[in-house]
Image (tube, rainbow, N blue to C red; front, top):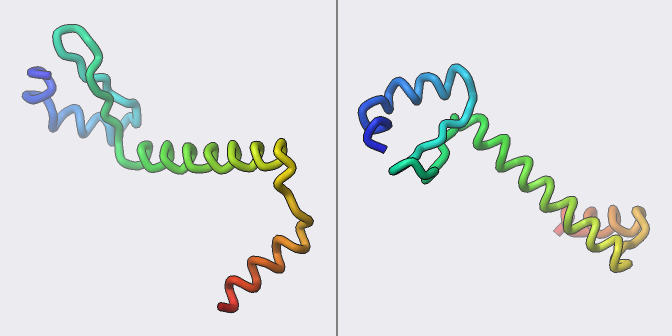
Amino acid sequence: MSEFKTTAPRVIRELAEHREPVLITSHGKAKAVIQDIDSYERTQETLALLSMLTRTDKDVREGETRPLKDAFSSVRDRVKK
């Protein structure tokens, strides 16, 4: 942590250049990870997509599906409102 405090500007520049996350340690133990904002946003988008896929898979396994025609009709009805 103390090293990061003194080298933060350099570390942040390197994050932008290399797009590699940086592990922050304290007393030899991992405490945090920092990453550039573009990588963070891509990670968040990926997690959101994985979450949707997981929910979709669960719905399919539980039989909670409906014909595509009905699904699109429902969406159109909501858009009209």
